[in-house]
Image (cartoon, rainbow, N blue to C red):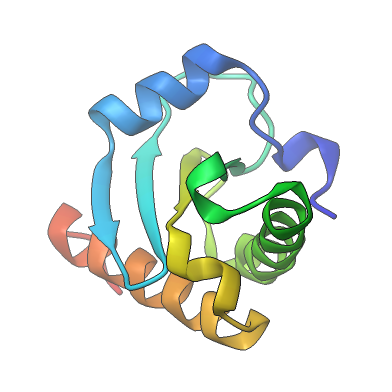
Length: 119
């Protein structure tokens, strides 16, 4: 489970991150990342998008749990001002947790290279 301070909850925050953020696609997910300029928001914030295309409710919840677990492992690598939205693709329902975590790390690295940050 992600700590409450690291969860993205407002739809406007999701929308801004997806529309203005840098995108990196992987075989099982798409990651959008954006640095926030808003002061006062604690820690990095992560949001998940797992649509019905992923599968039925049981499959979607399983994918969500795996993504939350993988995202929690990344919290230490993120800057406190970073916002990240993870969108699960239909193939993610067959992916195991270590694979999802590796894809998240790869996507984050690609985003940082595109943004001109050190990897």
